Length: 514
Picture (cartoon, rainbow, N blue to C red):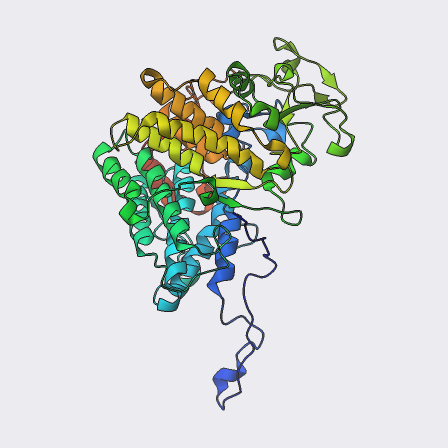
């Protein structure tokens, strides 16, 4: 499906003042101040700004991306707290690059502007759905967060919002997704400024239901009855059903002006410092996964820009992921250490011509992920349908998704067939197979890969053995800590949150992480 290009040079429309009236109130009006804002501009910005980098912690925790370096790059690679990196997602979602430009503020503004306007009913429902996505990511990352009182600084004077119980936030997320998805109406105004589907209501219903399925599956270990109820609603064709093809994928189509933030990292000044993790590469090699040729490469001169990086080796047998547990000094002692070329190590890196392109799309919710969740739901007996069929559809969907990165990334059907024959679905090992494929399918969407890893327990990764890890981390990082600023400025609400949910540490579990 062709995505609209992103033009975010404007976030509002300025309307000049009308004719002057006699009265002192007009003397005090700013003639160039924005008095009316089209919610469509705000909504596209809210979609765009929700695609945040997740490589400092999330992708490293699930052992797909790695760097040995200490200092400004440190985080999930060494299981330590480094505030500038732990607070990045919190700040991006609430504050944004400029004060008020984060998706939380933008979406709540849209909802205020459109709630009582029947001509903009669909964008109101779309904003509710996307707000649910944003807060799922926040809760899954930090636990209790400001929710009901968030973005009320201007409207209600609440500059220090209270943190809400994460369980109650999830209850409201489920309600919002269920209600908003059902309320979308194709007979009403279509919002063509939407970056995902140009306002296509059938596809927005599929997105809402696929998110509802994702949220409900988070709860299977803490409230299975509630989870099953919402899963049933999500898959019901009468409510619009879930995603049925890759054309339903929700993603941001970055371009050469508005670059993918992950790709900037892989192509920019840190390109010599970022590698693919050994467990990820080993899994792809062991299973003869054809995706390894698309996403992994060894450059002759890995520190150089792509134009001068030299020969590009994509042979699966030659790929070598960087092991965890080392820093820039001790990595030379790792078994099979491949040495360095110039300032960079000779480990595999992301392919800068495909998934590492500066204009690579950023996938947020996909058909592949949805099919794999259905496979698990069927395995658990929550829904009807054949788990094997859902599983194979999910694997194929992600392989076909590769083509959206570059024409060179197409994976032939014959290669897909051979992979599924060599790695057949096995009911006895279904949960491991399904969720390990979900891990692969969520590559570069670190927030979702990490959330599903904690929820499912798969793939079966080995604890990062780095000797300087935070003592609260008993196996894997379970949540990120709040920004230091919150502790010092929003102290009362911060203290209330940690008293309720547990210590503000990397080892504290999210409520659904049992």
